[in-house]
Length: 489
Ligand code: NAD
Image (tube, rainbow, N blue to C red; front, side, top):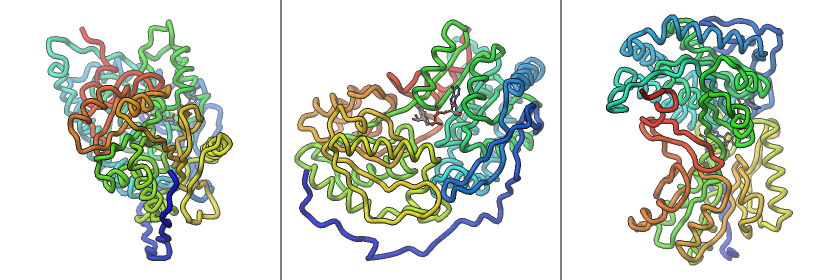
């Protein structure tokens, strides 16, 4: 796959002026407490941890670290709210509260977008155009279901499970909170939610929104902390369900812990998606889609297209075009509206990316990175592609969760399908071809929960999302997303 043509130096052709989003309109406190029973309360042990801006490495605020005692209080508040208010309230009244959350979220969308980018490192374009509008859309969508559950499951009645413990990751902080809270409330459950320790701030803003929406106290409790707090939630005997999104390692721990307890659980875990480009595909469209699939949002997407399978005859052309496009990507200030690639979410995540990229080089892969400079402070990684890699290489098998693409070639449709399926994961995939019949053949045979054709990373609240194999169990989104929160009677 040697490329003979020269890669263009786009940086010398044009430069964009800075276009930073204003931060004047946001209000952040120095310290955030736990949101339990409708109030912000200090953690019992008085411990706080810092959340920082990964683009600078500077502290933004102190955030409470919930201990077992705080988890206990939150679960108790959620149980009381379930018995006293939420399970007794007519469904159409419940839906009014959920609609209210959605509307306030829309009203505060500029503020939420900026905070999401500050705390998580993702480009403002992503938080402004994807994360926040989609979060509000999920609340709108599930608010609509609250009083129509009998149509979701015709001939069956639904019964809420009770109190759900919900644990989410750092890559789509507010969106993951919306995916979890909206269907749980719509089906009549109350919740205790824990955001990731590196991105707690939009969840605390959501707590403010829930207060503003005047939900009965204890219906939604939001507590912060790291793995220990998560463990205390998983092990709490007063919960009826655990909903988890995060790594496969922690997902397996949760599955083992909950075995035999009678608690229900749903798991949304890691991925190692393959994009497959066939030779008849529109190559320019595919290249743009692949860039979007792995480099935008720093590859911090569980369903990111981190593998690329190219049909042999077009491999040189595709790789060449990819390299050219990589030269034009703008890396830097997440708050700049022109930025394509923001900061890596944390020092720990940067270490993991570096480790896996070194392993790829040691195993004989050929690396390409564009000619760009990275900011001096904070956590950054250049968009990277690997060629000359094979199925057994770690970078082909393991989730990197960074802007790193592993490229392989194939000759036949069957070889592409076999390679696409040959990882422990089964979350997503992509097919690029102008032949409709091939789309049907290939998508049917790829073991993944979500497969896009001639596009990638498109989300909608009406559409279910979830994985096969080590990518998890259960579905979120759409009508399917109601099921993990009800018993059918
Ligand atoms: P992680 O598993 O390290 O952490 C996820 C959450 O679990 C965090 O809130 C963390 O504090 C908590 N946690 C950590 N240890 C725990 C324990 N022992 N018990 C209970 N909770 C614990 O994952 P991460 O690094 O935050 O997120 C990245 C991972 O999330 C990737 O693997 C990605 O693919 C996955 N993800 C999956 C989806 C999906 O829908 N399938 C969506 C987003 C992210």
